[in-house]
Image 1: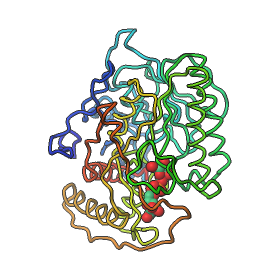
Image 2 (image 1 turned 180 degrees about the horizontal axis):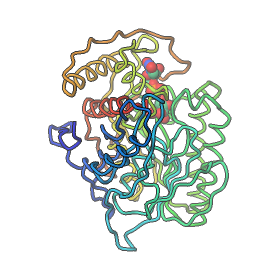
Image 3 (image 1 turned 30 degrees about the vertical axis):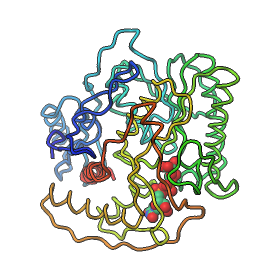
Image 4 (image 1 turned 120 degrees about the vertical axis):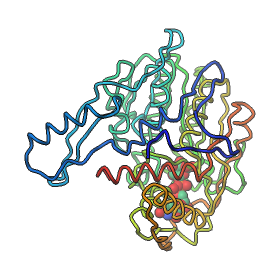
Amino acid sequence: MATSSIKVLDKYGQEIKTVGFNRFGFDSEVPIDELRSLYLRPHYVSTAPSTADSSKEDAKETESTQGRTPYQTNSIYHPDSQSISYTTLTRFQPVKLLSPPERKRILVTGGAGFVGSHLVDRLMLLGHEVTVIDNFFTGSKTTVSHWIGHPNFEMVRHDVVEPFMIECDQIYHLACPASPPHYQFNAVKTLKTSFMGTLNMLGLAKRTKARFLITSTSEIYGDPEVHPQNEEYWGHVNPIGPRACYDEGKRVAETLTYGYHRQDGVDVRVARIFNTYGPRMNPADGRVVSNFIMQALRGEDMTVYGDGSQTRSFQYVHDLIDGLIALMNSNETRPVNIGNGDEFTIGDFAKLVRETVRKVKKEDDGVDVPLVNIIQKPIPTDDPQKRRPDTTRAKEVLGWQPKWSVEMGLEEMVRYYKAKLAEGSL
Ligand SMILES: O=C(O)[C@H]1O[C@H](OP(=O)(O)OP(=O)(O)OC[C@H]2O[C@@H](n3ccc(=O)[nH]c3=O)[C@H](O)[C@@H]2O)[C@H](O)[C@@H](O)[C@@H]1O
């Protein structure tokens, strides 16, 4: 399906044609089709004919490159040899031309990750100069490869636990593994990333006088005794459990942030992000949305942990990026929850995902697939039982509220994974 033919209605029934908005003197609005063309590319990779004659394949590659939309790479997958031939980009998606005072030098740590790459797309299309630092532990160069070589873009392989020097105006500090299996894989490294990484980036902000935004998390509320969670709640965290490396790491990162703010006058912003999903989420990262969609697409059993009565509230990545950019450019220095209040039990969410996969397969491929089974697996230790953001503060101080319904976001994410499966890259 062509990206321009996908019609998305927001929670209030209005068609979504753009994301972002002009607020606090910073214009973050871009047409949704422009963004989509960067991640929803059903023909991003074409499949080579089954032949061993490489000269013919090369000729085909040249031929098909010429017929492609001009802002995309045209890589070819060779099923016979299980290989892929890459071509480099020659033209980039157009970006806004900003005057020098409008154009900001923006550092995004973790910019090759799931959330980071969407933030990079938006900031690039808006015409800013973007530098990404990432150690590629959970991020991947492929998420931002469509900007590599662009004069406004720089990609540096660097681990934030080591100091980093650069001149910049704004720092979005995202770097940290976020999926429970990933952040528990090396708990000490996760803590080190949260503590030393944040310390280094705050030191950089202090030296350059850059504004500093940290992406904190709903996990700082732990297994909450207050529902929904507002920013005044101090949380209920097990400091020695398996999740503590992330929860306590992010809590100390917030403490450091306010330490630099009070002591050194660093201009800080703290976003507490609630469960977020969308294209470019690593299908194997173990979080619930990617697990469920991949299982349903592959016709495998969907794994609900525990009895499925625990709840989560899922936000689509474009809403999160709107919220992060609004917060960065606002005057709000207190923590702000950024999340979608639509709360589901995980059991109900599994049913919604399998129905969405069936709907998209029917609409796009005309095939009626049977609903997959839902099975139960043991619940992870300290898995929070309830989670829903109170976003009153975001509404009051940022004028921000999520627009994407969970269903609409899920449909787009299913299309993204379907396209990736078809191109042979999953
Ligand atoms: O987004 C947040 O606010 C934070 O919480 C998430 O943690 P969690 O909510 O546990 O995220 P998932 O791993 O996606 O799990 C959500 C729920 O689904 C369940 N689950 C997960 C995977 C699965 O296959 N089946 C399943 O039932 C989990 O047990 C959990 O109850 C992640 O740790 C972070 O990305 C983030 O900082």
